[in-house]
Amino acid sequence: MARETLAGLETRQSHGLDQFCASLGERPGLSILDFAGGSQATVSFITGYGHRLYSDDFLHQLDAAFGTGEGDFFENQANPLLVSRFVKAAFPFPDESFDGALVWDALQFLASPLLQTVVGKLHRVLRPGACLLAMFHTEERIETLPTYSYRVQDHHTVQMTAREQRKPAQVFTNRSLEKLFQDFQSVKFFLTRDRLREVIVRR
Image (tube, rainbow, N blue to C red; front, side):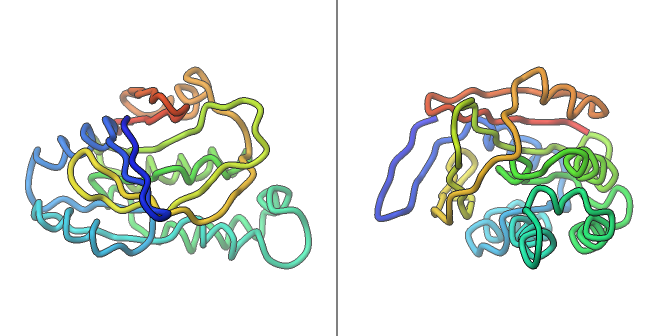
């Protein structure tokens, strides 16, 4: 994955996005879920294929549910009441509502068992054959990771605007990701030069 940086904006060439976009051409009128929040660039790109896009800022939802008030951000993710409120807010969709999901790097900041709960919800709201794109850093000894706002420029190019540094919940390996997505049909990995693992998952 090549990367170009200009005034805080990073442009990345993404094999994972290219694979995801290949699924967009399979049939018209698909519904896509985007965890990056509202972006006119992404909306224009997805609707240009003739599809519908539902966007929500998943990290903002996490902060609103677990990052305010008392307690540690990750410890709060084990609070059943907070988890219930978060899940209802983040996944207000009927079963099999979407044909694809752009999850980006959001899953890195979920502690177990909330991580398993969210992946289970994604499995529930995706239709059979749906494609999911997620990203995970591979560095084992790192205190914080940069987070970004993601915008799709074209079928293999992502624009990333830096947001903040966050502590990851854990380090993911190929094996742990295969276990995490074990209920899905397939898991495919793309390892980049800058220690980023892109994952394409088929429901």
